Image 1 (cartoon, rainbow, N blue to C red):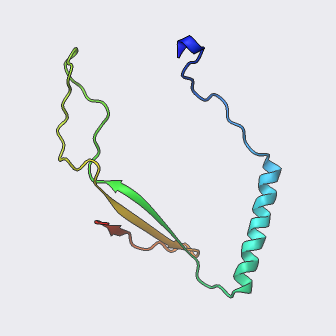
Image 2 (cartoon, helix red, strand yellow; image 1 turned 180 degrees about the vertical axis):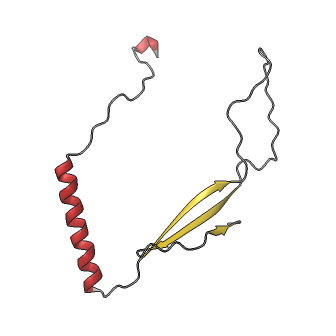
Image 3 (cartoon, rainbow, N blue to C red; image 1 turned 90 degrees about the vertical axis):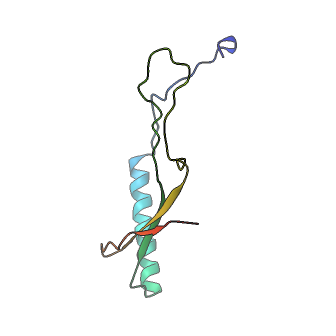
Length: 104
């Protein structure tokens, strides 16, 4: 990379949308959603989210003797196996029990 004048860099700044534009978009979204709810006589609104959870977490680093060429970490062999957790809540703030999918 040095040959071509490139280097690995880290982000130092981030640009953000204008606050007034964001507030205007939020107000329009709220109005649209409220109108859809009224037009369709919707009473119950739910939000569900699925996320993967690993059975076993293998650390990227460990402590070992200095100069060792190979570092072994014992594991169960299931470091890539995971379950799916489903979280559910409604618009009134009620949280429902966690739902786990153990095999897909």
